[in-house]
Image 1: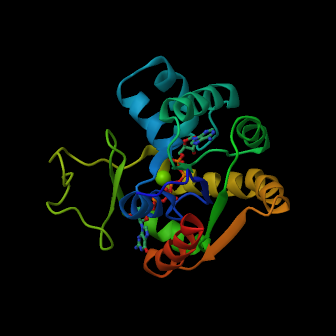
Image 2: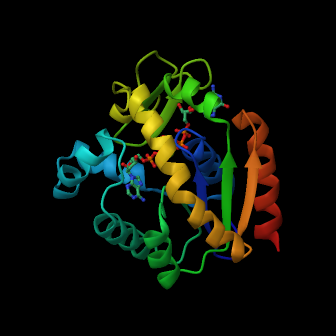
Length: 216
Ligand code: G5P
Ligand code: MG
């Protein structure tokens, strides 16, 4: 679709809409969506070694150890090769950001800034199709058939880490660990922040921003 390879990172609190905006970027610009959370959940579902190691951390709202995540994500980036992509959920702390910077030249960092009260309210209604990573939300993006994935018809599930007490922990961890990462990307002039309470308001601005960038 576009000739220039464009490497993007999307950053935002849990439930801020990273997955939702990434899917819109996939549909509009043809970038690949590389989501750490989706990869980890798929591994849990398949009961792989990675899944077995990651499960307890995810359920508790803690980060999966850096060595496992970094190896997995850099491996995935290698597999992807020379294609435009959007990284969702990686890097998640300074060590991961340094490991990524040593390997890849990132062109833009998109930051989603959604108030915590909005997030707490919306994750209660999140349903996912874990094998594909497709995300739904009751009243915002309903599945065509209640409780079923639109594409496969398989049952939807709720995420174990969307329980209120785990969400609170994830939000706190995000603020603590991502501030230095964002500061580092800001120093490099890479960050553009999109604030709002609704994806409907945020997406048109992200789309315009990316269109300008990829057309340059
Ligand atoms: P994840 O999977 O990366 P988080 O915590 O970063 O998880 P999450 O929860 O996946 O982020 P999101 O992708 O930002 O949120 O948001 P989303 O799914 O698109 O939107 C949230 C909900 O709101 C959806 O139901 C959506 O339909 C709905 N929605 C969107 N827009 C609107 C709107 O305008 N209105 C309404 N009403 N609804 C809307 O990470 C999970 C865990 O994996 C591990 C950690 O344990 C982490 O906690 N992990 C890592 N560990 C170490 N290092 C890493 N790099 C790791 N990455 C993941
Ligand atoms: Mg997500």
